[in-house]
Length: 235
Ligand SMILES: [Fe+2]
Image 1 (cartoon, protein in one colour):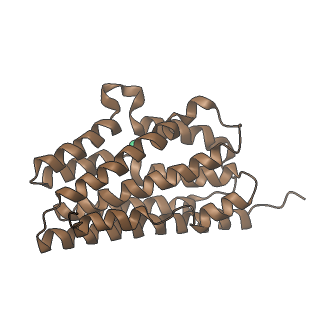
Image 2 (cartoon, rainbow, N blue to C red):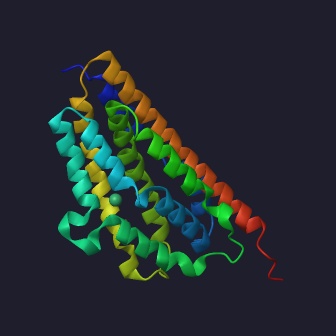
């Protein structure tokens, strides 16, 4: 049997971690569906990644010297941009999803509610402005994390039927696509050269990305709890 490279071991390690255990999803599952909480999560996700994700992917393609890795990332970039079908551009679909949730935006949601998204955008911008293999590592775990997070989100959405069905296209697409992209993560890992510097940068990017996304969910949960606690009493 071939010896797994350490980049492949990273994919195995993160593939074995659960996102469904995050306190945000534990809390969501233990309660009736809270559309206001879903709005807070999705609006922050949109703010954090939507406008810049294609730019970050393009930066990774520009920085990487291995055309095979660039080819895998370009596949993802093309998906993000809807393969030439403008209404299928992911940022357009996510905006539609968030707009459909807007009617549950709590009246007391102030600007602070968007802090998790702003911090996510700044962290990602820093990660995708660094070393080529740091970006490769970050892409590996972001796809693994996203596939797990989208599943949790899908499970929540299936517990309710109040959201207009057309607005769920983003989620339907991502529940399938992210699994494919998460599979690409293993392919990416296999292409990381066995040089110490490349492996170190990949490991750093992979761990940093997982931590950034986990912390994003921590902060979203904090905002959900803060908005709930400060809601005017209805009694
Ligand atoms: Fe996407």
